[in-house]
Image (cartoon, rainbow, N blue to C red; front, side, top):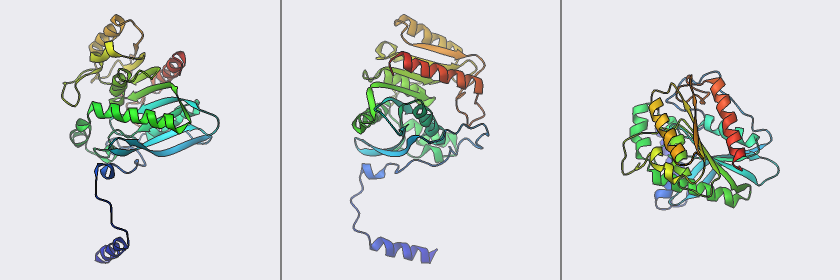
Length: 293
């Protein structure tokens, strides 16, 4: 070990002086390879979508004070393509989220999933759920998420491969909640799809509003996809949200899968419900097409 440290010191001495550390240099440098440590083992039914015929991989998004990593996938020919911003679940951008991007790309979309926890840490590597919530998730401001999604939208537009006049946002769990909020933030979108995004929670300075609070502010139609047996998002909460959506004009709606629990689309977890995952995917793709994406 001592020899290794001496070699490392020698190599370091040969490098030019480092630039002063700043916020941009301190964010997570790249995406994690593999799944999330807090959910193990990975279940055998995991869906794997080939990258054949696609341009797929990691990119860096200039986002204010940071360059945040993101996973992008799109067809390797043609374009510009309709655009889908994919918001990761509570565990960050790992293999499942990357695969979802490839699924959209196989349908002809430019799909991109920014790591919205990049400033706070690597959620996919944290095995302890309590620490994950306390040290990373609870420290991410909604305003920062919206700003980073704006930066992702701008990055896609500047690439020349994305047609952001035909753009949507979609997300899962934590990302489902953020999809509701971003649909109330960005009028340039055409549609949104929120998979089992939490509808309730204590308001705070970092999270001042929940999806029911922004119903009257929605800029685009949102499709909510929820499980009837989700213990954390109750049927009364879903019914109350649906009533608000109806009162607001009915452009947005929620579909409830009676036999599904939370995270029923997450094929790498025991919560996966194949029939409802496939049915909800058909609803999501149809929703985008019906709304010009």
